[in-house]
Image (cartoon, rainbow over all chains, first blue to last red; front, side, top):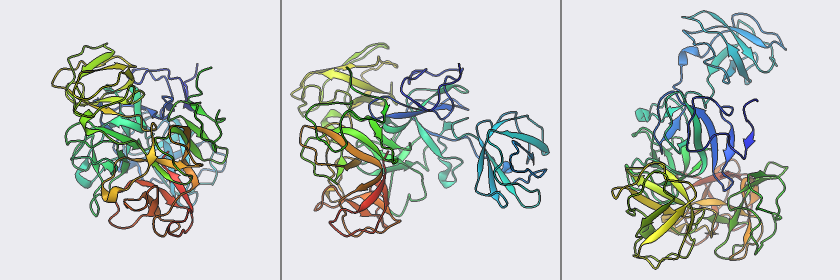
Length: 245
Length: 245
């Protein structure tokens, strides 16, 4: 049986368990039937309950890459000169994003690829065929992992973030395991500073796995996560209303 | 027949009807063929069409409570709330949020409870068993179901009392059930001039309730609700594009 995908009303795995075996497609969304929504993730490190979760750390080495060979319309694989070592299928379910013309503005989902050590040629197989031909001379490509693969406790970055927030854990998730994160509705989440009911909350730039209340002329650059559902004390885990979706 | 739940496309209750009979679980989402999304609420006061709706009022006397010790697998928890009375099942379908260790970061949906006069022992019955044992060092908040007993959004002159949930499509009578728009185009009361292409936030005015205003500098603390879909005049009901979800 293939993995459950789409919008799931009946989960194959509980919100309070994690599994070493995938039971849904990464990123699949489910609802508890009463307003809350969750997405399915795989962790790259253990994450405690009630933590804001972020994507895998960006690898800029694999950005702005040149196709090693031109790719015609209809091609379902693209040969690229990588920036460095790549593990087999590290970008499975992620995206080959064309950032410069010709072909710019289109993201292709990656089906699979081999691994290689160091910079060199690697073929990426796509789920959909190329829509606009790519050239070696001018096209540029970013390799972007699936946002729900290899997630980790949000890294505050002290203003230099390494990923984007994707949800809040509802239960402790083990490293390398699969489970659900809350992306909409009420969730218990670590507070960095006092949370004020009715105010926006953003991903913290000072505490890993936390949110902080939005502050005028101060937090505009930080990713909005939702609203403070109750008043909450710093270091505790009050209820917030997540609107990541 | 049970209430329609999950992600539904054909609601049992019209989007333009206030009903004294509950026909869906609170918070359930329905999508229209045009991309708009709606959630099901109950109203604690009469709410006219085109008004921003918020959660019911927070009771801080029902927060930071000390539970009796409980073991993994328990489905009842005893605690003594502060001096604010609660009606029977006021928190049913809401949550007990563990804000301080042990057990922090987890929240449990509340099945039922008796009325409580305040400052006397309260027994909560949970839908899911306790996952991490609680001790008298643990602290818990009681949080209403966000979609239960909704009110017209009150900016409170910067002291908000809840979070925005969506915008009414028709008048909903106090004590009745209806739908609010949470994603896509809707008509909503404007506090000040709305400028197309700018963000829309929940008003923080204490003179015009249920409204949105155009995002501007120094409004970062206010909850973002979407975008201004058209230019709009103060106190009229122009179109906005909601992104609450």
